[in-house]
Image (cartoon, rainbow, N blue to C red; front, side, top):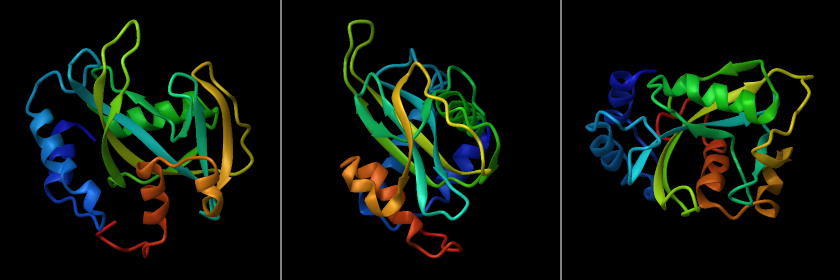
Length: 183
């Protein structure tokens, strides 16, 4: 999914979640900039994430992010790669050790969130494009240097691990009918 296809998907993107609706215009504005996929583009840039589900679709694989110190879906910087689906898959593989997925290429969720300042980088925005990946069973989880832990979490227990609205929204989207065009 390159920039032009992402733009097409965003122009037709529909959501049932009010907090997500304003993100579409913000994404479209950012994507007008040629460096939108570069982490050096400030105040924000495109990132890709994976909402990883097990075969039964009743658990998600989250990472306890070392720098953010919270449970989130795997994802990261595009670093110039405009194939944001490939970025999401790569980040999922690198951060979880899971290699084989059934990949859903339709946008699942979008989010704009603030990344706090660090000594090496100022506060900035991540414009996160999220896709559903279903993990092929019987693969070994590996905790990367970017995380404190990686864990399969039952969707019904998600609030015990995170209060992040955007993560809970993805769980809530799983409760909608699979064929729904308004996730």
